[in-house]
Image (tube, rainbow, N blue to C red):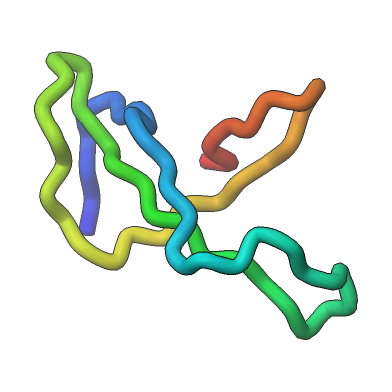
Length: 63
């Protein structure tokens, strides 16, 4: 699937109740994001992969 409009992340929520995990390579968190287009319309496509980078304590999309 190819999306040619600029997208941004509007909301991010943790999928699950557990907020503390050991960084051992086996534990992970799953997040759900709501993407919107340049006019703030929600993108309604399920199961898109979003890569994350951490830079100066601000999360951003890796693509």
